[in-house]
Image (cartoon, rainbow, N blue to C red):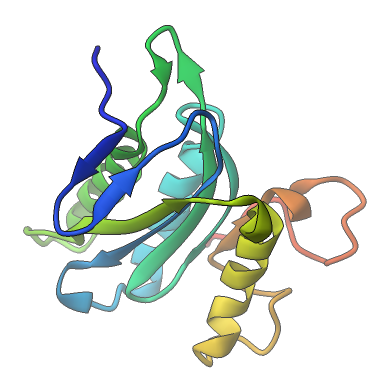
Length: 169
């Protein structure tokens, strides 16, 4: 399989060699996902762990998702950004449409993404996504947000009080 690591739609997309990536994708027409749908998106994000990428963290907001990850590699090289995002977007869209008995697009085609430079490393982006619900007025503290996961909080002995995965009902 020939993977494409540089392409352009409306925005340019570049992928380095096994470097961490920060990606954001939004719902179609900025539709606000019901809470049950956000649960499904969080599950789809968690399914990326160890299959397509090393997942560092994510947050599912009402109308967009932020992911921080490092692509894994196989015999053909690093797994491409489109493969990773397609997996999470496709899985979640199918499940959301089935759950809500609806048809149609859930996600915008385009995403915003970039390779993290040294000065804006994984920890900086994880801090950004943990504060996103607080800035949006959806949470009082970055420590207790239902639709957020971070590898830092999944490690035993974490003092931040996070559970290893979102508490999904």
